[in-house]
Image (tube, rainbow, N blue to C red):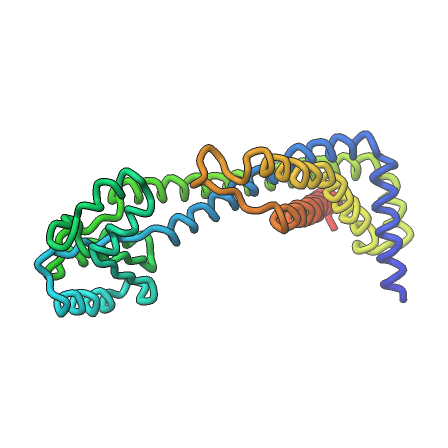
Amino acid sequence: MKAFRILTRSISDGFKSVFRNFSLSLASILCTTITLILVSVALVISVNIENFTKEIEEDLSIVVFVENSATPDDIEQIRSQLLSIDNINSEEIFYQSKDEVKTEMQSESEVFDAVMSQWEGDDNPLKDTFQIKVIDIEQIGETAEEISKIDHISSVNYGEGMVEKMVNAFKWIERIAYGAVLALVIVTVFLIINTIKLTIFSRQREIGIMRLVGASNFVIKNPFIVEGMVIGLIGSIIPVCCVILGYTALYDYSSGHIFTPLIKLISPMPFIYFVALVVVIIGIIVGMIGSASATRKYLKV
């Protein structure tokens, strides 16, 4: 019961301290709000980039063209050799004969249909193909090279050069965005440390009296930690609103994609609530860390 009374008193004192020193707290809350808005934007960008990169990796296929001279036995031999390559997903190997390729292309375009309708039997210049998906996108170049060494393979195509550059570019953007989140969190910690430090300085006499009457370190520093958590919580309210309303509006306005239908945004539900929860947790934890650091440095407890 004693511990519970101390805890409830610390929470009460922490909330009172925020409003008792409102001018100091307001400055910290505003700075925390601004940084958490930037944190939430960086989080939204980084998670969307990560999702887009994964979609590219999942959709990317290697197209293997088979020589026209290959027999059905040769094609089965090619399939078995493809299955023996470690980086190839054994459940994502699809074979299409040249007639099936022609039929598919005809269905996609009236121009193709008009031209290809004359191609029958040996007059069809297309090639049989295998469409393959890899397990590790970063090894796609080595995998394509290994496939090209199989007998009766005419050529291998996966958008070499461009694919690696695009995936690498998005991964760098993702790293930068997460780095920005970390940097902004550190900035917020320092802002709260400075606010709590000023609060402690303005209450030196009160703290001295508490020590004289035998108050423990736990009793002295807990209200300051609660104060930091409250500052972080209040500072996260506007960023949470910005995330929920702003991202939903962006998604609706852009019809779920940016610049091109290929770059799809994550559906708002439940994504925005996940980001909002993360922002609130960051605000509270950062406030707690900032306050704990300030009390340790300036109260010497």
